[in-house]
Image 1 (cartoon, helix red, strand yellow):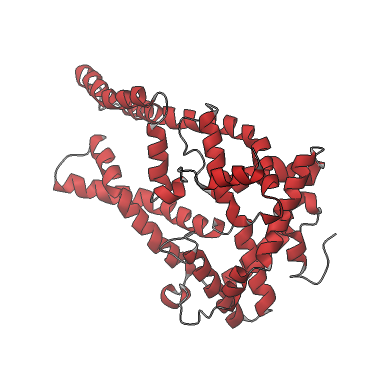
Image 2 (spheres, one colour):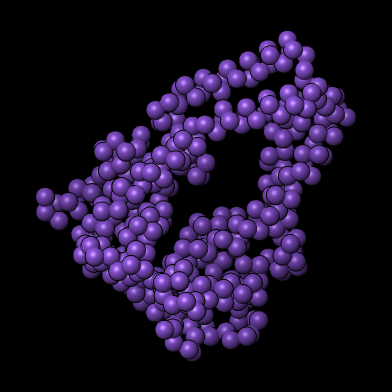
Length: 364
């Protein structure tokens, strides 16, 4: 098959990526789980377990025992987690089989390859996994970004650290690096750096303190999970009356608020992890030259918040609380890209040449 016909066949494929079909990663995972080989057996076990547990506890009259409650809930956790855990293990063992395919796909696109092509490659990888019997559906890989991470881990990083002898992988790695140069010079990135976002507010303008901002969002998450946790506490032994329900609700909220707050804070800090987002931040710093100016970093924070919102990476929230946090994030990412140990220690070796432009001392 020629490259042209291969490309046409791929572009005309009817399959779509999960990111295009599902409203959230949770709905995608549940749908994919339903396609698993032993799903119906697992679902039957989920349906039967509460009945069996209730019969045993009723006949033995041991529900008041803490040991009995622990065994019941721990067993329920094991039953519930069996299939999801098995699918995750299966994915970890099957994804490495994509190594040669990912390198081949990048090489076939050649100089025409751009960062947007990861969606096409992800779709092709999903079709391959299904056709080869390696996965139970064509929804294994969620989006192009997930596919890019697999390529980086299996093809690019070995090329950087070990100088892979496979010529196809070497060529694919160089093409991958070149794609970031294309984005660095693209009109898309230029538009991001020049667009005016002065009308936007930063979270600091409303919440004043970053922990209050994260606490407010964490409280929303806790309230969503409150009914389920309250039900568990009631089943555990609290009286089913207005006072018992109120007590269960208060206890559940207090148990949930801290982990939800920490998760909200962690999520904001971990949002900028994709190289393309790091590169966008580098470009903004290089173009605007904020130095140590708090007001200039506020402008960059606004632009980045707008950029991440448009890319649907952080729906409903703003990543940067203020310019100070944006500045600290930039310094951290620059240090991760240009570590003292050289390029082999870099978290983003594909961005080293661009990060060098953001600091005066060249990277070795």
